Length: 413
Ligand code: DSN
Image 1 (tube, rainbow, N blue to C red):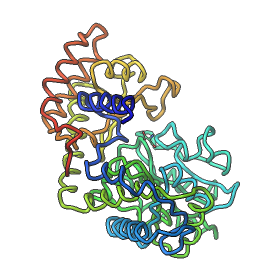
Image 2 (cartoon, protein in one colour; image 1 turned 90 degrees about the vertical axis):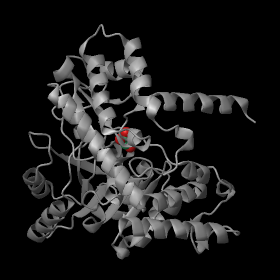
Image 3 (cartoon, rainbow, N blue to C red; image 1 turned 60 degrees about the horizontal axis):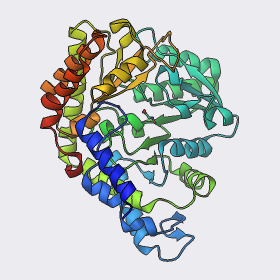
Image 4 (spheres, rainbow, N blue to C red; image 1 turned 60 degrees about the vertical axis):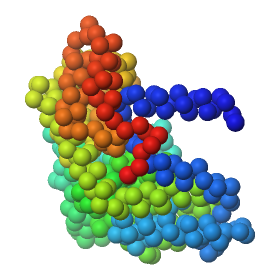
């Protein structure tokens, strides 16, 4: 036994069990998912795809990967799934490669407005390989379909990208499809439509929002956020003419051997997400997120509102502190969250004016609506008064909230 690693895992379990996890991109997979991720499949090389591998001995992993693909297709009601991407960034890397040529123009939302590093940030491969231009949000921080229509005509992009990391509102993928089709018809353009649904994949699986697979040419996702699977990625499409390009963009272009143990865990997570209990879970996620947002609003704080698993709290306007200070203060009382730029932010990404708060993880542990409201009060008490008794607040987190919750090491769904 590697005592050091076992010791660190035990320490991390204590950290996770004793805190309130509000990072919107995190969640707790079931013990079944975690066992699959640590299973015998980690020993197997299987470069290629089911039925066409570069190694012998792949008959069982072929069965496994096909099972995972079929469950994934059924869950998202889509014709094709590639379950091999190691992460969301890898999925996006392969997706761009499958859809457009180097130097092609992509119209996306900037990172500072809620996009993602791989959506054209100068520090990511994306902006170094493709020509990213951006659309703005409307003045109220919502997507504005008139702005999108105008930007499509101005830029005539090869690809339009939707799907975000810090966008708390519903996304009208159907309307976006209509705008892209209208733009293409008017200009003779060939703009494609891609959605990165990483943050809302669980909400899509639960049937609680529009399914981007119904409208986009290609959809990417992670599997570990609201979908509650292992850390990983996937690519979906109904465009069977794109399948060869997607497969070869994943392997051999950008990845080697697939992580079959993670594919085993994805298969398990897709089964769990297909059950009626997952819809109930997602109702709790939505209810808890809204309850915390609304309670902070009732207390007079500046919040974004929410239609999904997250909302943004403007800590600069609400408490005259920046996002970094707010994040640190909450961390010291056992609440984990992350600083985040808000629409029209006047501070730099290092500090930010906002905090992103998500309820997917705590809802997996059994957070109730009353506890989500109590969390709003604890956050408010911690941030409003620079002299707040942080030890007392930490004790309140432990006694009044976390004490009731499931132990993460025993979660079954
Ligand atoms: N880093 C993730 C998030 O926190 O939203 C996105 O990949």
